[in-house]
Amino acid sequence: MLHTIPNATIKRLALYRRCFIELYDKGIKRVQSGELSQRIGVDSATIRRDFSYLGELGRQGYGYEVRTVLEAFNNLLKTEETQHAVIIGIGNLGRALLNYFSSDKFNDLIFKTPVDLIAAFDIKESLVGQQIGNLEVHHLSGLKAYIEKHQITYVILTVPPAAAQKVANSLEGLGIKGILNLSSTVINVAEDIRVHEVDLNMELETLFFYVLQKEQGKK
Ligand code: NAD
Image (tube, rainbow, N blue to C red; front, side, top):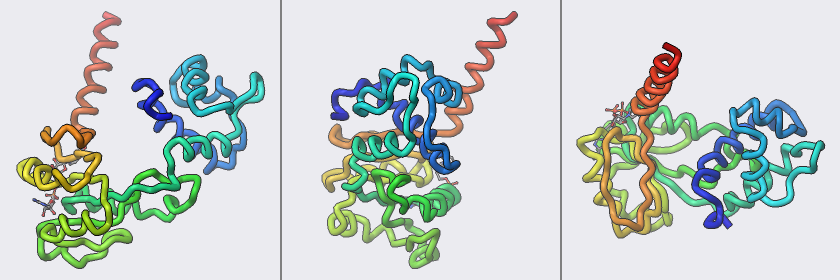
């Protein structure tokens, strides 16, 4: 099903899901597409078109049942067939992410993410054996065996830029499908691994450019 969804819609799906999780959290049972549009800044027609990929979800004038939409997302994302992930590099950022993903909230079926973080790795001996969030830090030397034993398919990379490519190279040929690269540098890996780059500094720069462009347009 996912392969028939346009890329632009896929990018918005996580945004919709987050918005519905927030509504669910607040005890809101139903939402109109106009209201949704205001909340997330996507026009109603686009929302209706995007939601058509999730199946029959809303009736004209009735809006969307929050729980039904969340269940449809879970079906689409196959959250019951959770994939396993590890995080590599447990410094400031890795530690913050570990604490975030340890929230009990992610055990709730509705909030469940399709990728479950199950182990943490670092090269620093002093970190090995420490419990951060609800996971224990392992030494990097055990990574390959761990990936093979636990059928790890995703990796979150939070190592310093200078270490990122070397770590990425070591992940090839182990069945890894995706790397979420937060290490502030570009990495190159075999084509069968999808890399998703996240860099807050770049996001801030992009925001800055949009604001600048808007301000210059006014002059
Ligand atoms: P840090 O120095 O606090 O932590 C890095 C950790 O990686 C350390 O614990 C270190 O022992 C470990 N490490 C080093 N080499 C390793 C290797 N080969 N294998 C496994 N572990 C290794 O750094 P930080 O502040 O947590 O930042 C980590 C990375 O995240 C940096 O690249 C930084 O630029 C980046 N960063 C990205 C964003 C973002 O938005 N993407 C935000 C902040 C920081």
